[in-house]
Length: 175
Image 1 (tube, rainbow, N blue to C red):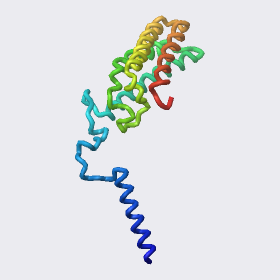
Image 2 (cartoon, rainbow, N blue to C red):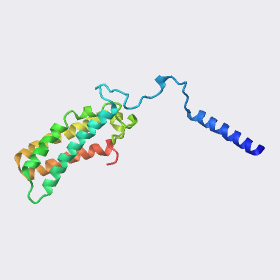
Image 3 (cartoon, rainbow, N blue to C red):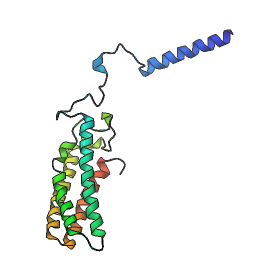
C-alpha cells in the first residue's frame, strides 16, 4: 500500500510541476497580460478581426467568381461576351481598396481561420506592389473586355491571372 501512495504522491507533484512550468492556469495574472479573444479586439476601422477577415474573404470570393466566369466563357465553344464583359468590369470594382482588406491584426495570429500568411505584414512594400500589379492588370482586363475581341481579352485575362498567382505564391497558404 505504501508504494501506491508514494507513486500517487509523485504523480501529483509531477502534474503540479508540469502545470507550473507550462504557465498553468494562474488566475492571479493581471488581465492586461491575457490576450483578448479575436471577437473582443477592435481594429482601427472599428471592425473585429473576424469581421474584417470575413469581409476580405467575401470580396475575394467575388473576384474568384468573376475569374471563373471569364475562364469558363473563354473555354466555351460559343463564349457569352456579355458575361465576360460584366465579369471583367467587376474585377477592378470588387478589388478597389484591396490593400485595406489586410490591416494589422487580421493574420493567422488573430485566432481566426485565414489563408493570409504573416509575410503580408512582414513585407508590406512587396505585398502592396503585388496588389498594385493586380489592380493595374484588372483595369487592363476590363478595358480589353470592352473591345469584345477574344484575341485581346484572353491575353489580358492571362496577365491578370498571373498577377493573382504571383501574390498567392508568397502571401497565401493552401494555394
